[in-house]
Length: 482
Image (cartoon, rainbow, N blue to C red; front, top):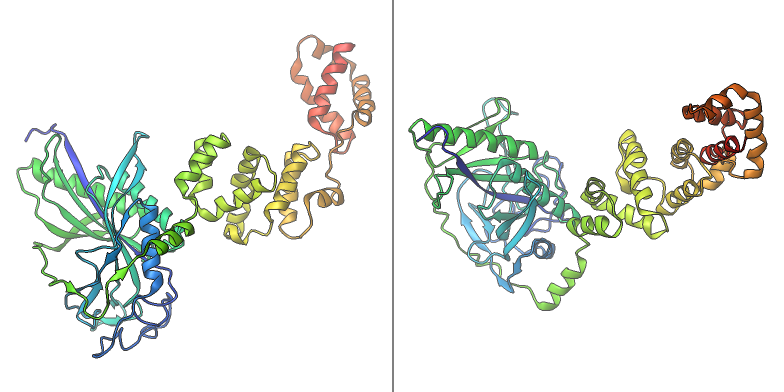
């Protein structure tokens, strides 16, 4: 094949999201992360004979919530299935999952491409299942240890169509999934703890070719950066194999973070026979029209909708709108500030600069920020009225985090209110102009940069309390009349 022959990349992602339910998928036991090993278990988790699974209602509701948010069709009737395989961290010898009848199917998510265009990524299905336990290989020199706390944790698997055409698009798609599950409060999205992880299927083919190439699967990618880097490496590896006259082997590969390469996990992968069959102990899941409407009403305004509102209704720049709509709690806070009467652009600027500065310095989330939206609006109004300077606004915001006082009260106590009374400022301006006749003459000869000198003199004599904008206006007017 010619060395300059272009290739097209074809990627599909399977994303697993652990759900924020109080209990496990089919057992009444805590779903809390970080407990001592093998403490959040029941006879069902341990695979004891005679135990019967009972579906967690929120597993079903969260699946429907995510399905609606990702434009899926919701199945009125779906069934659970047994996925049979034997592994030490799955004591039952099977996983309760869904196979032929997923609860959500046929959806899509729109992402942005490298060129700034919108690309629609189809969602084949979202199905419910339980997680396996965890095998621990590094705590005993001779044995693998098993922690079954995670066994039975409720999962949603989001399976995309092979519509992704680059590692960057995969990154953006994964980021959209992360954003959605957090907005919907169904998953915390913590990739370091494994709450959100993905497997990537990837192949390359000559540009213009309709048939898919031989694919490889990369397992358990647990960060946005790893998704992108692993796929970048695998694209180049597959293209190199083909250009050198070889054939890509269908296999499962692992991402080696230390070496930044993919390496074989199973050298040859055939289709697994999981012997799926309907789960006999769980009746079909019915999603009634009433339940569907109830869940639809639980869905908040989603990030893409908020982005469009911020840019269209408030004329915010796209980067500001994107930053404000990325996290639901920050977006909710911004909306609450606007609801209390703040001007949209001024509020956005203050939140994205000073409020985020304080959050970062103190390692706080926005829901723990001690300045309520109404008090922040009061601070913004003081600035809008030219009663305080921009530096005073920053000082006051820092002060407000440690007290329940409003901005106007604190500004008065700290002597930070600006003098915006013309009658009070005119005598000071007149005195400054009389004291500096040479500078006045040079200004009249065209050295208009001296305006800063005059403003500085007035600010010094007023002990910093003069309104700089008004001072600048008065100086210009008075020199013009001389």
